[in-house]
Image 1: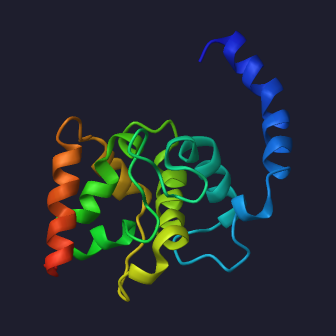
Image 2: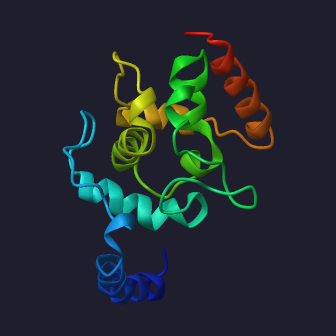
Length: 160
């Protein structure tokens, strides 16, 4: 980042945080205790807000014009072979500007926040090293076809 861009980001950060604080309560982080793998739910929510919700929307519903819905279905990927890896390789995750540790925390928070009902009982949270390995091999054009296939496997009840 150039010195000018860094200075602009530093000036904008307080304004952005003030704008986030003014959001309706429904769009803010849930008050419940975060799951294992999420050290700071507020930080994870802020990372979601700044990096993901622009396309996936505040409630995770996405749209056909921006990004797929996560609400009520994202954890289903964890129940099929290759699904966990897929989530770490999708373009928005693999190319995120977040370092691996905050990104792993965000992934764990997102799974809990948008699809806790489908989290496997034996869910192992993403760790920074795993996210680093996965995002080193980002999906590109094949992401949509892979998503469709994994969701078909989940609907059939295939398991890892």
